[in-house]
Length: 149
Image (tube, rainbow, N blue to C red; front, side, top):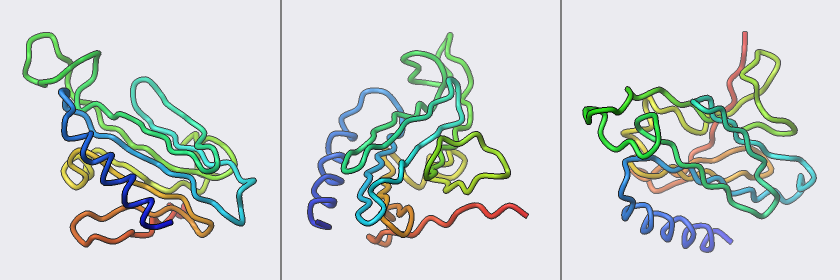
């Protein structure tokens, strides 16, 4: 199964390098086994707001523009609007509203991940949480939830 994940990731990396616009992609794969009846959501706080269900055994691909507006490629190009930060979080059971009562897992944060992920960030959802591919270490890093005080 891990080989299948790696093949999917490598295929996605290959296709993401041919993109003509500057955008990051977030690929989330729902691989729950024992908790297959638990819905998994990815919610991105950007313009426009985006919240999607990731069905069991399915993958969700989200394109995150590095500038706002349709087909914006260069921040300095005439007519393009300035870049806006984007945060995408994963949650179990319901879509996120970025509230203190939730247990969110930060899957993508443009402030750091625009350079760390470069073109693509890969996340897998397992029974014990969310994991993100670390391309530098070549391992899956566990994503720990935000714990509100």
